[in-house]
Image 1: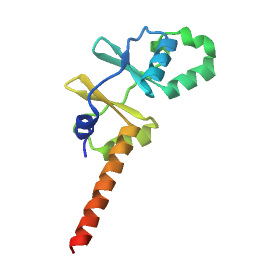
Image 2 (image 1 turned 45 degrees about the vertical axis):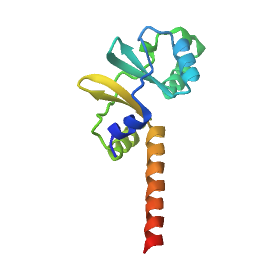
Image 3 (image 1 turned 180 degrees about the horizontal axis):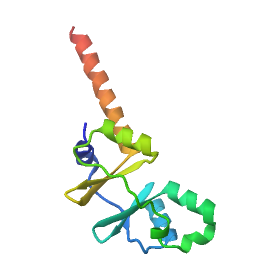
Length: 142
């Protein structure tokens, strides 16, 4: 199973903010969209990613005053990305090793989607259910 197959089911929608958006506004967007991360983009260029973990970390370090800071001060700048041809196993390894839960998908230098650990778990559960059903059908006909 590849990233492409997940995106074909999930869709290619991307939620992003510009680097100068205030952290409070980005947090509001995360809540409204019920998501755990937002891409930080300067027009179509990926500048960083802002996750719930980034927010918790910076609030702990700097207190509530940081809510007025631009997301560019808080975001993760060294963003690990993936390609549509990467496998779910490769993504799980990247996420486990890097201790993060969101991977932007890049093709030909452009962001084409975002994969979360939740997307991977959902797809794996669907695969296991399909395998179980196939095995049950096989046993019935054997």
